[in-house]
Amino acid sequence: MGTVVDFRSGRSAPGAIAGEGLTHVELTWVEKKIEYWIRFGSVTREKVLDRRRRIVSFRPGDIFAFVRWAANDSDTIISRVDIVRAVAEGEAHQTLPFVRPGGDILLTAQGWPKVERVLRTIDGIEQLGIDPGAVSPDHWRHVHNRMTVGQAPRTYTLDLHRAYLVRRRVQP
Image (tube, rainbow, N blue to C red; front, top):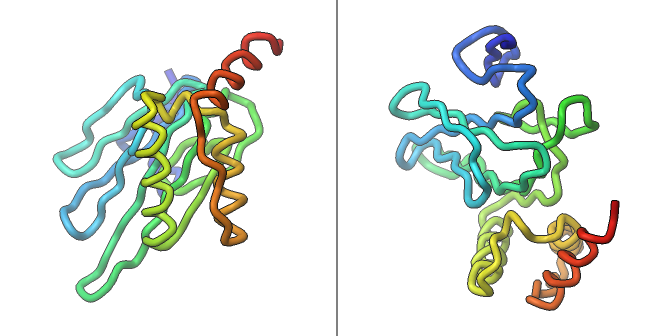
């Protein structure tokens, strides 16, 4: 197996096994202080580090939403959602805190109003009976780009999803 890597420093520590081809996400939950969670995605493996921290792992190609929220005694420090495609070993990727080795970041939103819009978009897709992790990566990029310029993204529909699935089958 590989070396165990600390997610913040990169030094050896309890955590995910490097070199096994999975993308690992460190989740923390300290009620009303630090709340990092997965909104959607097919977790391949889960490792509990302690009562507040765990590591979830995703296979290459899996798409997941990673939500981070943290506050101090008087205000929110961070409110962010990232929709990420897990990458294969050696594949180009962007780095992201608490995600190793990183991933293909399809969408990122910061600030609670934008995060809430993304969460509502995810809810709308689920209401269609579609797993958000099975949605076209291009759609998540579209949502990101439209939100970045302050415009409403196109609604994901069953027809768009069917077209994506057909395109995926015929492309090598």
